[in-house]
Length: 554
Image (cartoon, rainbow, N blue to C red; front, side, top):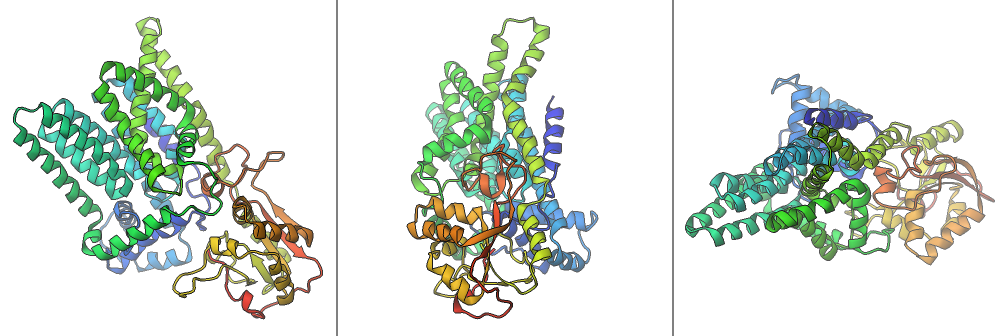
């Protein structure tokens, strides 16, 4: 059964894994991992980036060397690097496959842990729930670090439980090493250390030889540190730079994003579990928690401690919310779901020969909703992005060098300099930082439309990723800008990502930018309108106004 789950899960992740390429619409995927790995072909292993750890970056680099080198460690990679600059498709497909494989290894680790803690039935339930949870599948199709944390998170929780229940040195080393590896993929996964320390404290309390317990705990912490340093060595070498980048990252996390729904962290994350983990898996986990509480309260608390610690940390120490931030806790939740599924299966009075059938039906019921969303999402990603549809229309209908205002929701170089783009987001006053979509949105006001006309920018391309963010923020000037733009322009072309008759999805940083989970979506991308201003004389080329000097940021 595990083989079926792993093969089916991997095939699901590989379906349309090349979506969007050669364009990269997910900024974290575009700039933070594969692009950093490509720098290593220049002779340095310093990513010069520490806002996320480096484990995924180094694994991607190793995979690229192996694939592009035909299995040989040394060869001339200059043609590959040159080709990457022209078309990054091949490198990003390899990196996405690394993510998919890492995710399935996390599923296998969760199965192994659940089988040793309970039995085969619990392991099958846990593996199936984790393998087909929408969020784990969706992030296996992007070259980002999130799914890499599943394997070490599962092993860290398992090792901690065994510290409490067995206490041999091997479990301290397993829990410590797995915790270090989890941190090597995601800093916040370090909260699993609380489970390790809790288990060590319980063991210390019950151990006759407390010095041995202390030495083993110290060994676990030493192995944790060593594994983290191996995965992210330049964090230590460039400690000052790393700490500064973490400070910047923390400040960003503590600043709400413009357009973020005005809901609290707890409602947001609990709701994210219903679609990211799945209602079936969530209900099964709740049942499993009750069953485990009745059998062994300490083990129940150890299983729920890590997801709960993540939740409390993010709602108390961050003002930005993203569903994937809870993903390190998914293996523990999946193990509880396995306990719940197996417990219900055993409680149904059927002959022993039919128990496997009952278990299969319960597993199928638990994963039905996420599997449907997984399949739908794969089909959506396989269709042409609305931005490409609009670009093709503009190429056919707008002359080169036309002055165009394009809202900043496209990758860098998307229009290849075909148009004279103006009125993009302003760079910061220091001149050292490029403009951002947020700076563009906050600069919007009705008077800008007069500036468009004076400068000859009569074509305005609006995108829901920008428009809806601005309107959701409740800023009166931004709302007035779009009302005036609607009154004083006509739509000459529109590309919608939604199914015919479907209600548009309210802007959401998870759904609207890259996940496309709601059933309303038919294709990826924002809702785009190409507008032509009335009473405006179209200009061509040049930079006639200071307002038009800044090009849109990616």
